[in-house]
Length: 276
Image (cartoon, rainbow, N blue to C red; front, side, top):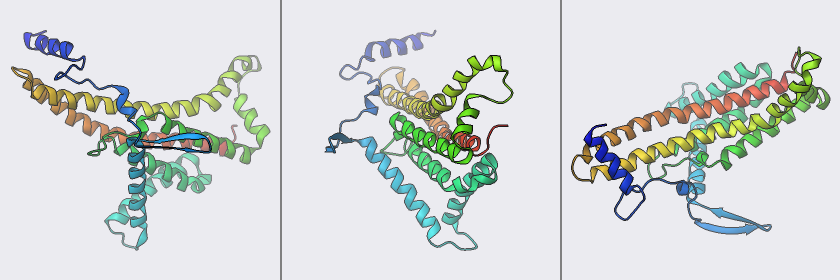
């Protein structure tokens, strides 16, 4: 390690404790902001925080965009209509039709709503003055995963009947009888517990990690650029990394919305089409 790198390490080690005037390292406190308003409803306490407001803004913005895109539809679409139709076609054709099959088109509106909601809230992680995604709080992805879990189980029972649906979930076709004592618990756990849990964790973990990386490089750049000696050189590098990570985060924003909805479509496909 060079003497400059040693100096940087010493500075961050000495100042990282968050002392006055030192480097303020990010903590998970950012994900638990103080309440802007509090109220009780039917004996249940509720809090409205900065993240709640960001989610409302993101949801209202995507709704407004979609309403404006569809308000004056024409045969030759304008830019806004083309944007809305392209997004919906991606979900309808690339997910509902291709993944679920002929029975998938009725699910296209739900999948599109899910996609646009996740996309808009993910985008807030790089939007100025917001710079945090509501999906980086585990409660939001978990709620979405529970909705998906209820839907695909309801559809499976409706399409196949309760007896066949649970039988197919517990006893995969082609498995020897002797192996069922091991396979059946694993399959039941996978369908009814692991699926929704991993669906929620995947979205949450990516948005949480992306936010923390952006904060680390951004705060590091601000601190090091104001430090003396050779530290501004490292500050410039940290600033460039913050820019690179912003573009990388943009890719993650779209990819995670796409993955969440594709997996939802996959689970719906297993619900409408019984195993053979």
